[in-house]
Image (cartoon, rainbow, N blue to C red):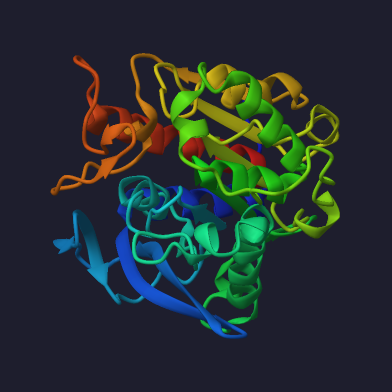
Length: 337
């Protein structure tokens, strides 16, 4: 049998395949100024320059600093970290996506990172709405920047843009997809289920302390970003989302659940989201705790659920992250191409 292929798509796929095999990972900082706030973004991208192991705080990256990027990417993936995190905490996954051909933009959320918690503590009423907006502002800046915008391919829906998030970042990317947070659900949940979801409910989650139980939901139209064409959420905060809004999401969504998560008990969060999202992909990771999706830091970083570096006996985080990087690349290939 003679197999025939359309020349242009076939050649493009060969170019992407060669790039994915040959590319190493470049890295540079990108800054987005909005009013009086600056957002720091770590950009990971395919390059031909040789990568080196570089220590950045408690994480070690294998990157080529400020190397020239490849002329063309597979797409753009926005990355949102969890509460109190940083743009470096998911570098293994970012590097896997960049080595596969994607431009990856991992932002440091202003007011909710390891250095600055003012958004969470001083303006908790803005926490759940501001996080998705911060991601959208980064997207605005990258799509307007001549150094990057022309390297991002387009499809019939526009630039190929996906979003990846962990924990509060998982909430963030689901809100970008159209999930509608309702502060009433958060308060009712912790009044009723505090003993079953103790770490989440004991942290003083960002919600106005004097907000009535009838507080209105945040309008989803203010948070959804239609430019985001696919979402992957890892151990997301999910209890805030209404079932009705999740049922209306049409953006492809995949959920990764840490089966032994004590920080965000899955049945209230990851499983609640997957149950109500139409045709959602749910991936359960056996014997995994909440921070399995992060790089293993070289220094102790303590949380209400213990050290970020800790794993259950028998869990191999390095092997898991290598596997997950390939799964995420395949997922975004499928949903963005």
